[in-house]
Length: 516
Ligand code: NAD
Image (cartoon, rainbow, N blue to C red; front, top):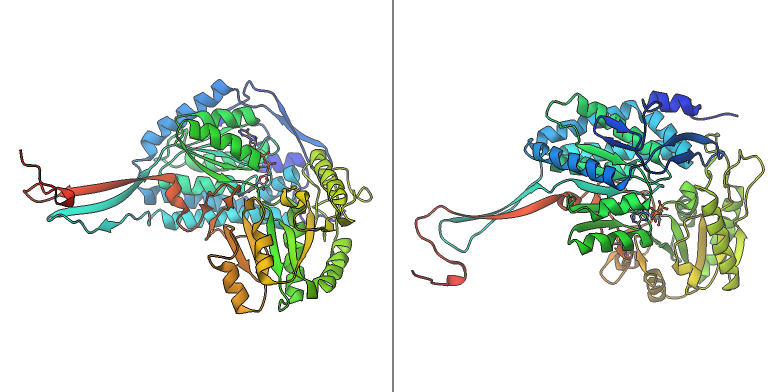
């Protein structure tokens, strides 16, 4: 079989990344431990073969790891931000050197095709570059004071150790988005990765720890890793020593984590599920739309938070577009993601395939007409392979309003533009959205205040594949958090407002007199 990655053996990938002999239960800086929690067997979704067994952390081991991060915070917060940026710059270089190997591990552990797996590592490199520049730009404001001989300013200070809980489908990039910003902002990072991708987490930790080991100003314990399931996630969320919990995953997870953090009046940054739609209008360039729809709907086997799940097509173009989509979906190459030409790899596990089947059955019961969606068993090496599904259905069917984390595209239709906008916005989630149109009024209305209610609203590109320069996140049940670019760094710092009196009088604000 032809493969596009040269690292093919599991052992070779783990050895290249330096983690073949590392126990993976938890890691406090350079100290790697097996952990006393239940053991996790990592299984490759490509062929169902077990890669490696790792340990997991118990709740008291999580507490020990967090204490180490708190100690590291006391040292790291006083290191100048541009020096902290230098650490992140070196990590970016380390990732450049290990891009192929780390990409191969992402392919192996979560089944992404190499182009997307290495693209995820590229995203890590990009956020490192962004964070390095940011390390010299953590600006506060100078504000005009209403009092004579007074100066009013705002400064941004390190916040404390940041808890990061991440999902399986971006097993390296989501942590890097958080870690690169947190580190330049002066914060250690406590990472609870998905129990479906503990090896990717171990590799990311190890590569960064090697950089930290050679960096004099960086304390041991600056990064800690605690593998395990939701009880480990809850232990992280509940810790009062972590002022911010950045959690990426499903809406039920966000509801649970959000409540735990709120109960202790901590801050949370939630990046949860989406139900992303694209409106295709009569003036749209259908060739462009077809390519964008196909990548957004079937890329990463429908397992992106920004995957296109609802297509809202004008009545006049629906038949033509649907026919072209049926051809594209039925001919797309599905199989071992390492094989040349494959665009759709496996779902993460059998559970995901069952959820897809259930959703398609519900869609049929709710009046949907399904094309595709069947299991693929020929020419694949085991694992849960499926053909992406197209479902013609009513916009208000219950199944359409739920995120099923699999390649199912619901095809809906509309007559007038206001109706399309209403359908776009009627679901509880609010992550990504797009419109294909060559009508400037429709495009501007879509991006305007009464248009898409999502955190991401695109014109003539698909819903997935965001750049790191923009703030990333969504509204409503998607959780409201923003990470990555723009001013998302402010989440990882605390703001201090300083009033400085350089005169000899003591004037009070609002003209109040209070003579003693
Ligand atoms: P998941 O919610 O099952 O798990 C995510 C993480 O949360 C894992 O580390 C898990 O162990 C932990 N967790 C689960 N329940 C928990 C609880 N009650 N308390 C504490 N921790 C808990 O999600 P998944 O299946 O790994 O990922 C898919 C989901 O993630 C989809 O809904 C997808 O849309 C979403 N996602 C969102 C974004 C985004 O940026 N908005 C990005 C990637 C994935």
